[in-house]
Length: 300
Image (cartoon, rainbow, N blue to C red; front, side):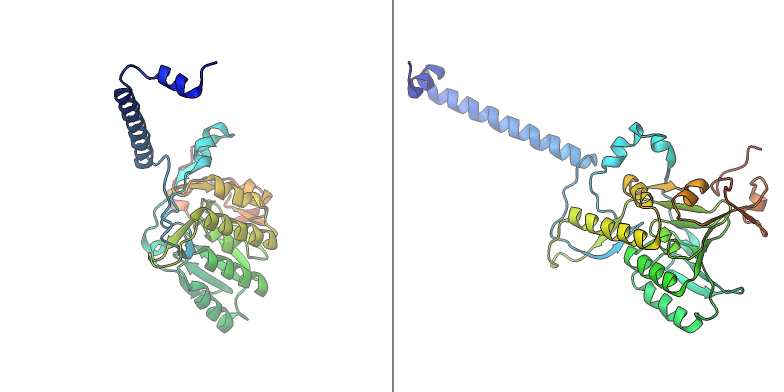
């Protein structure tokens, strides 16, 4: 039986130096092709290499993404309704793009409008301390923002036993539904747009301790799931968020809002939608409201 060295000598051609160089060259070419393919995948967004030198300082939604590979977006066409349920994430404009403002209205309503900026929950708590005896309902119109502040606001709302409301034709997305979930009674107006998507995180300066972004995402999701369970909201709400890419929005239908306990009351104006009736003045609250997005026109 031939020995290993003999087999090796037999395997090499008459000029072993040239053969070894040839195989080294082939290995270099193979590694180069693999690296080029990986670079191409990164440029096309198929894979992303996280920057471990940066660590998150403020957990937020509807802000720069974690840039993690989006598995749900790959699987979405295989699911019922697929991507047809997703809408492009609207870019906040006007007052919605500004930091959140807090305004006391008549009828015991506290209107919060705009982006949930880091620290706004403290200003919200201060306003509750001043006007808490008068406030009955917190009215929301927000594209989302800081998840930590959204949950703090929601917990305070639940502690004070306030109701929450998204009025007819208004907007509550990203982390805003976490505030909505805090209400003892949760009202959704006719054609109110209420939706969720994947979370994102703001990263700090490079001199901060490194942290695995996947771990950050899991931690955020766990905190949100625990919070929704505390509020008595179906955890499927956050499953829809995790399945939806950060640049898309999963908008809940009225029957879904009710079935998932994200809303306890759904409003219906009782009339076809038209631009002249974007916000009905006297909606009648019913269990199963007819759904259209604010930008849709009635075909009736």
